[in-house]
Length: 398
Image (cartoon, rainbow, N blue to C red; front, side, top):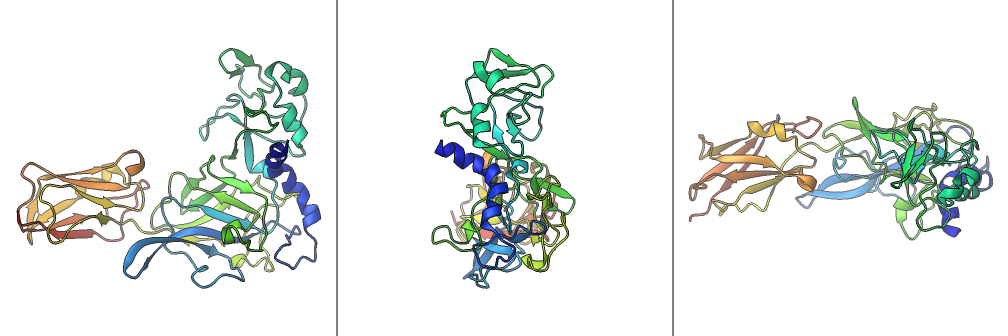
């Protein structure tokens, strides 16, 4: 039952704890601020930087907002946010209604969805752990314990032909398929961020959150704990972009209009996270950061002494569009075109790797070669490097 209470806290406590944890005269780091619209105080994200002539280093910083315990290296405008593998922590000044941020896993697909597998359902406002538990009952008693006519029942089938649970049970439209609760603790085994609840806007590009990796954390405040540091500040939405961010673009965070606090106010962002300045509900444009540019770093090239036959691998910060690599050229010496090569892009988890494979006979000995990557070689959003990139090396003598 403890786990059930813990999981449902994402929804129930988001609305109720604010009544006991906050006051209109809140001034300390442990206070929240329920008056007015819910405001973004800080956004933490991963940036790429160079130190001691070593490029490609990464660190997590405050890209928006400030904190009294932070130094200049901890908080500053981010101009090179990591395009891949980023994780934004959007820290709020008050609790949001978790019902409009996360949904729970059901026993079957209950809706048609292009964003997820459809086997997740929203939790009605006002639901308690008991409401979730009764809809986690055995399949044969669900029509009585968790009837579709009850406005607080969850995992209601929305498909006209009914919803298939397992291989043999079809639940009619309008009835509950049941909460997926394999461990029988009275709570859903998994949650996910509601598609469209929170995302990232980069120019005209909408970058969605990864529903299974992103989540709402209603705990925390502005006091930095001994364990977790700045990355434990809260309450916060943790947003993992899917699949990546477009390179060289200016981005902001966006909340769906349904995401509100207990008073029905939409999320906004005050200038630099200063909650005393206030902001207009629904306007989060004050948050912005720049994504690192498209580029290509050689992996393990020896210069001089590069192998005459081994492929050369170049790493980009984001997935490469395979159709864009046809313009790559190689020059032998100062000006002689070299055409005995094939460029290719990796697959699966290696879509950010560009490999140059030499044809039969390989490269000439003790010769200078230059690989030129034009701006037409792009990431998956079709953004290329700011200028052509050249990688030069001299082959081994034998």
